[in-house]
Length: 143
Image (cartoon, rainbow, N blue to C red; front, side):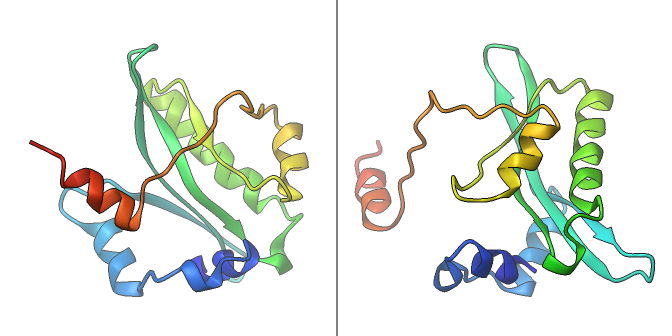
């Protein structure tokens, strides 16, 4: 389903994740990646949430960063996405985490849903990313 998500996000050629890589990341002895799946009444997987911990230096506690949330098109509108987010919110509350963060593409119609549950866009922050040659070049400057 990660590849389905990449296709939906118009970036299928950028997704190189293998089943083995995902399994290793989720089930390593000291895994830093966590996940939940949504099942339909027949037990078929219809969605997933992949997340990891972040940390707020201002609040002094961990939070959850939701890396990916995906619900198959046939299951959208069934409440599966809401239940996945509610599960992550419950993890936050149970563990004393104070934030549940994620990014969403500006054209994604799910933004309306996110607004409906009280999520607020953080448009004052500009995301940055280092990859490829720029990442390697900077790493070469490390002491």
